[in-house]
Length: 630
Image 1 (tube, rainbow, N blue to C red):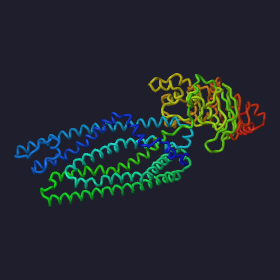
Image 2 (cartoon, rainbow, N blue to C red; image 1 turned 90 degrees about the vertical axis):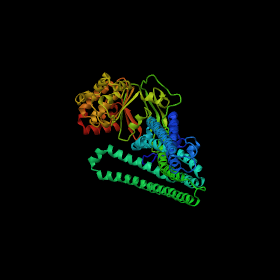
Image 3 (spheres, rainbow, N blue to C red; image 1 turned 90 degrees about the horizontal axis):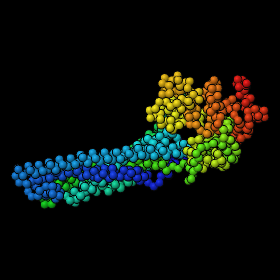
Image 4 (cartoon, helix red, strand yellow; image 1 turned 120 degrees about the horizontal axis):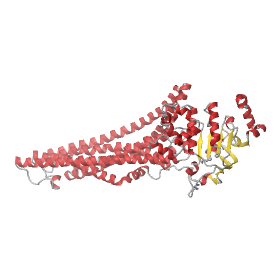
């Protein structure tokens, strides 16, 4: 069930398996890059251990000329035996310098390779996730968009996917760093002194277990934070989109309080999580500090009391402290990585939950793919409701022949718009059937059906771009030609002329190349509607749905549009919804609806003469607008 605030808590259960495993599957698409990146990252970590070994060898065999030969000698990089004389010590030092230079060269090359390969892999995963999530979102049914807020969807497509990219980019490399560093240091320290190595490594399993517990502990906090962010984004998106209403009603304080309330919830959730994080990290630092002090005391005491008999060499003692920092730094970072892992897991649940969301409207296994659509429509005893609500459409039966123009009249909320949305199958009926050309719309391939239906709504949506681009949106081929730099196609101009839009377009600063702003904000309501009509005309559909399509135009403009529409719908099926009844007066048939039912149908003259509901509506409008009477 959808979140009551339009959030996305409900989609978390759609994840197939563990969400982070799903993320890894995306990374494995680029396994050569991933494998090479991991290998070079491991080599980098081992190369970073070399300087400490070189320093220890220099202290013992060059400076003090004492101590055991060491690990570098065991692997054949340094000679055995005592170093006697200045020349021999200088030669030994020069060999150490060469080894150090080679180690730094290897480290630099492999570090570049690992970071480039793993970070570019993370960028590719981010791109794939965003593309897949967006494409999947577009395929979901209208019900999903009704139940979930736009701000939350943007939060998933942007902040959640970006968080997963950052996790792969930094914390995945951190995991390699921890494994390689701890493994390498464990081997070296155990060889030097098993007793001190045991003390140094004692915190490691404790830190690992504590981090695992921390993940479970902090998880509910991050789930709550992600949902709070989603609601805050939705509130901000709503307020920015509705800024004209806020200004006109002077509701600055009211909206400020609503945003402040959501912001305060987000603040409180973050503070609670911050308190847990800081306390956990402080405990990790205390534990590593205890190990440092213990090694300092026990190792130092052995040197003092045992002398040469079984004590560490001076270089080896220094080696321990050089490695402790390298050992505990990534181990302490585990806590931070565990924290970020939990954040990433919360985001992954939302992203892969969205990808796992199934559409309530889907194509059948063997969909019907018509070559053309004639335009016959049949509503056969149709009943429909939005979710668990009362039916919006009740037992509607209506036959519409191809090429017929049907006017839909009735009070607001009568079910007119909902009825027309069943034709392109934006929703499925609860009972009954909607048929186009005698085929149930549920048997069609959705896009084949919808390609034959064009809708112009009361508040048409225009995209940020030019006038020409918004009109060309009605025809994929024309749109592609325009995007490829072609001059404004003649088909776009013809559609604009048919919709009576050419007159105002010619007056725009750059004509068809004029940018109209987000949602067409630079145009008037009537201009936006005429562009939407032109877009529908270019689509050349078999069925046209006009939902209050002339509600925002003046009487003179409406007259011109009506003249054009009369020509355009002559060979098409048209469903015309109008509150202004003069718009549908000349329809072949007018269907009157009330409370989701068809209560009257007939021509304008027949309905006016019957003295029913339509006659009452017509009479009321005639009284208000005498010009409606011929």
